[in-house]
Every structure is written in structure tokens, then in C-alpha cells.
Length: 346
Figure 1 (cartoon, rainbow, N blue to C red):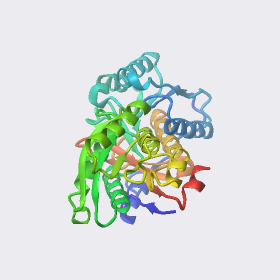
Figure 2: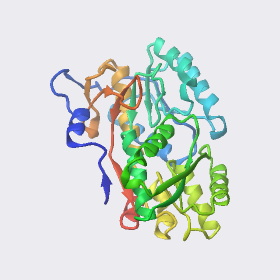
Figure 3: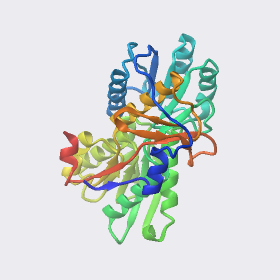
């Protein structure tokens, strides 16, 4: 399997090994904590997989209180996330784990939670300003996401390059914005000189809207050869649109997707390459982190180190992708093609 490791050996050691500055934290199992896992919205496989991972961690940590998996609808994601966070705070939960789709609009609700002593851990997508957030559990290094997408575009379009567009999720999603910005930065390199980014459009992580946006890109840019969709909903919608219109020979699809959902499109050539990380592991690591903070075993401060169950040791560091804020870096990326997608989809 082709893999893009998101850090050098030195960086990997820095984010996963405590060099003795602080004692490694170890959360005590069996604490009864009411914890909320809040995805951007309900109804898509990656967030269900994160829920699966969080439940695995909850079982290992022997938390007798069932995990609450609460999320809004895609159409009401911003207001819904704020409402759920506010309600959870009123109920006095111990921890709220948020994949933020609300930008800094969620800050007042997150700050209110923290003021009540609730652990606020973001995952998948952080709070841009980091206000109201203890720590962000990052699936991958966001700057490397742009490089991986640029490399896939170059691999698909070939040495002669070509024109492509980005089909993103929501304009308020901090992770999407960071990935898109990182790709634009990567494209400045000489290696990618023959790649031309035409446009960035948003499907708001809704299948029908993403499908229509993909077709609109084809109409607007007849010489476009690739749609890059850094969203699991958008990449499937774009690939289906190209397949339905019999355009897969002229317009390819790539980006970030789930192997089981991308299998057919990769095997038939509509989406030759795509990438992702384990959302099960992301949910597991997020729960381990939030539980450790909520029980007082781990302080959300730079240099604090802890044991995250089966995933091993992690250290909290400054988040280099934001002016403020702390992060835990998971990684790595996996890139899928015809050679490995079938095995990954099982």
C-alpha cells in the first residue's frame, strides 16, 4: 500500500514521545462521565466510523455512562452544532468532542462550556481561533494534505499537467479551508508548474448539491480534466456525476474518500487515486484525549504527554496551522488506487 507519512522521523518523535519534561498521563478507567461526540452532521460514513472508534475507547476505559452521539442535519449544521453544544453545557456533561463546521461562530458556546469545567476537544476540524477549545485532535498535518492532493493531481494528469478545480465542503469548515489553502501553496512549487487550478466551489457536504456543482464545473470549464474533492461526500458525488454523464475518460475525480464508498469508481477509472486516514482511529484517539482531560489525568498544555490506549503515546504541541491553539497529531495518510482499494474496502 502506498503511504504518505505526514512527518519526518523527528516530527513523529516530537508529537508522540515525551522526552522527560512532563510525566506521562494515564487516565484511570471506570469513571462515570457523560460525554458527547458531535460530528459536523449525521448520516455520513466517516462520522459513523469515528463514533465506532469512540465507542471502542469508551469500552476500554470502562466508562459506565453511554456515549452520546449527537449531530445536526447537513442543512442545519452551523446552528445545530451551536444548539447541541449549548444544550450539553446546560445538562452539565463532562466532555464535548466537536468536529467543527461552524467556524468561530461556535466560540461563545464552546467558551461557555469551558467556563463550566467541561472538556472541549475538537477533532477533524478545529475552532479557527482556538477560543473555547482545550485541544484539537488532528487527523493529519494540514499542510501535508495540500501536498498529497497536489501529488495526486500530478499523478493523474501526468507530466504535461492540466487544469482542475476543487469541489470542497462548507465555506465555514476550518479543515477544508486549511487543506485548500495548503494545496494552493503547494502548487507554487516548480514541480507543479503545469497544474492549473481553475476554481473552488462548495457542495456543503450534501450529495445532490455536490453532484450539481460537479456538473456545473464541467459546463463552465470544458477543458477541465480533474475535480479534486477533499470531502468524502463531494468525491463520491463528483465521481458519480462523471460516471452518469459518461465523462470519466475526460474528467477524473480525486480527493479524500472512504475506500468502501470509492471502490467501484476507482476500479472503473473514474477516480484513479484518492486518500484518507482512519476515522475509527480518529474517534478512538479523540475519546481517549477527552476522557483523560475530563478526569484530570491530562492537562491541556504544551508538552503534556499521555497514553492513548492501543494507539500509544502522544504529546500535546502548539498547532502550527493556527495562530493560537494546541493539537495532537494522529496521522498517517494512505493513498488508494486499483492496487490496494479492494483490500481497504473490506
